[in-house]
Length: 324
Ligand SMILES: *Cc1c(COP(=O)(O)O)cnc(C)c1O
Image 1: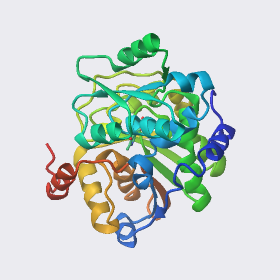
Image 2: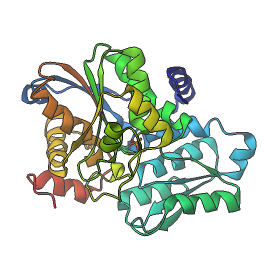
Image 3: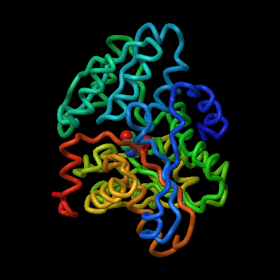
């Protein structure tokens, strides 16, 4: 494998003092409803509002002086963009971000506030990777991929490392799944620190390429899925992430938009936290398995991000499960 747990340990040292060690939160009322003990790793409280600063900072901190001077480029539907923009600002590197023109307004605004230049594109007709590659070639920028890069994966793995250091005896860990940076990094940490714990990736029902890939043994590509989980609306796993997920994960599950809406409300009511729909994918699937094979077990759930427009959040709180 291109990344190992020792890379996660190295990333952990590199990000210390810059990236928050986020809290682990529990809720007695959620546990009662779920019929299991759930430990939430709160990356919704992370800098820039999601775990992505872990991988972005770990990657940017390893650039050569020449690469730093030239600057970086990234493509993202939101949280990776903000993370690269913030990591670049902290390290004094200039950043250009390729973002869909229909990204949530809060994500576009935050990326610009961090001082990055934004290039927008149409995510249903244009190829963001090609646009970023062209910018990299013509301007000498270093491309920071959102998930399929060894140092991004190692950085994302630090969240699960912290979770297991705080709560060592988990029976299962659930994380949201888009391109698989978070799941592959998590898998490296969980397999090392809690070798028998189950590891689940959870993706939106509308885009189950990860589940198809996991089962078939080769990467399946789908059209861009329409889902409220905008942070996981990816079309395929990466080469690096797939190899790790295939070897180390227990299974890849899905959650519907209605389940995500319920999970957003459950967290708001019982923990008072704002978690974006994508960030609740793990919880949605954990609640389902807690009604069966994981009843009474100790379950780690990654709340991967909290970036949601306030009017969108209000809609989710009042929609009572009707979400289209
Ligand atoms: C990016 C993102 C994901 C998916 O992460 P991958 O590494 O692409 O699988 C999940 N949740 C949030 C909040 C994200 O920003």
